Image 1 (cartoon, rainbow, N blue to C red):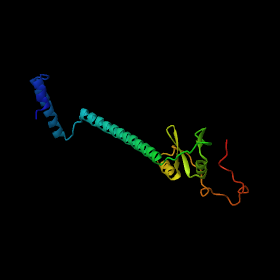
Image 2 (cartoon, rainbow, N blue to C red):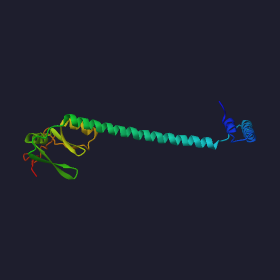
Image 3 (cartoon, rainbow, N blue to C red):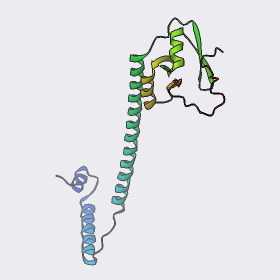
Image 4 (cartoon, rainbow, N blue to C red):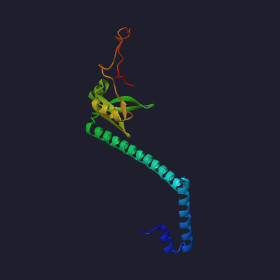
Length: 180
């Protein structure tokens, strides 16, 4: 293997006298270090190590960001696949079912049977992009584990509600199927 000094000499960038002088200076410095027992610090080497460490940290951060983005993309694909495989029909669409999405009230036209399933909590409204889909509650629970912002409306079933024994208005239940 050819040393850097020899390569520079062949390229004509350094003459023989300068190369000889640099070699002598380097050997003198090594002799002084051996006699005194101290080592000289090479600023260029330290700067290179520091730069290498910074680049390594930056590379780790970028890799972590790429992995996080890939995980998000995989979760979005899983959600889309679950919705695609288990979406339910909205029926004939003769009854308007109103629900709150964010700060707005949205309207979905469904059949009477689908409305009954929505009210009972057996079907759940999912908002995937701009599309509104209906999926069974079991699937909606799996979707909510991955991304709860996709699940728009989940009605509680009768077994989910806890009624207070001392509630004076317990006999007066409020229906969920008000038409607005």
